[in-house]
Length: 98
Image (cartoon, rainbow, N blue to C red; front, side, top):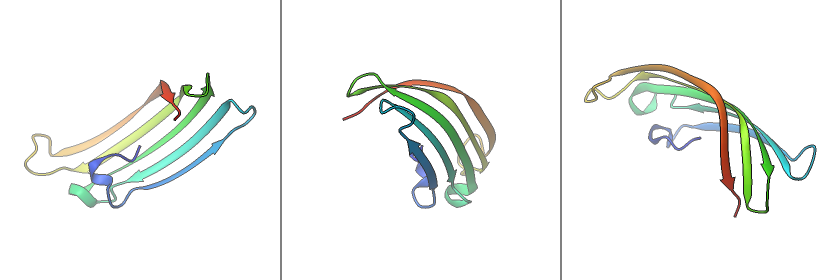
């Protein structure tokens, strides 16, 4: 979640993962604050709740909800110089464990 270019120096992340109620299940709650005025004046936040089921030792099936917001002034050389957007919705994915 913290892979944005303007997050290199100031991103903070708090997360909790629990292997409850069974060893093959994991539930993750995550929160992220980004930017804080650095990188052209943008800032944002992201929260998610994801449940993961380990189908095999290496294949995971994930489902949950994610919400993300970003706003601020962008670089003057860009076509869009101001941004204020909130995106949210369900998440379904496949992940791999090495």
